[in-house]
Length: 133
Image (tube, rainbow, N blue to C red; front, side, top):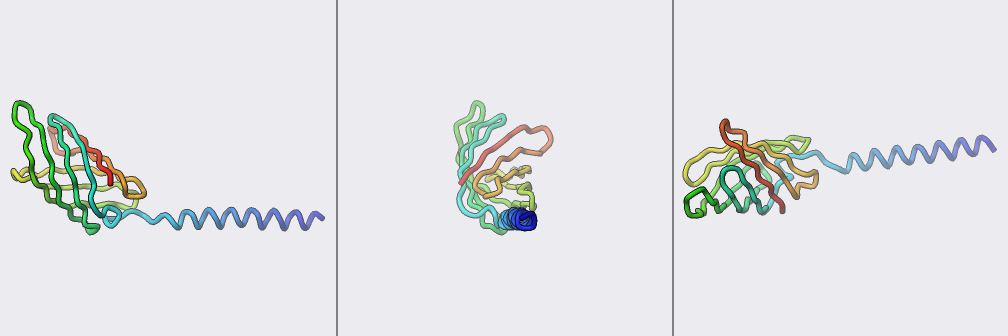
């Protein structure tokens, strides 16, 4: 009887370990391919921004934003840039605005690639953005 219980326990534990390993293997690491398609965003710092990014899944994106700046009318502008994503779903974005400003951001993306948060890393500037598909 003891041998049967031991065998049953061994099979049960082995199944748990196999299931856990399979679940971990099923979740692929992040890469630029994790961001693909259209995402809407909102952001703020000294100004307010609303817009959309279109990620190509290979490290480039385009976008449009409307920005409300202090004492100025809201402006709509085009964005272009590049992005990276490391295996842990953190990365960077660099983009150029229609006015020629270059901006640098650190990016944090959910494992499923559906949502992200950004913080600007340029010296003397404080800004954050959130985006989702």
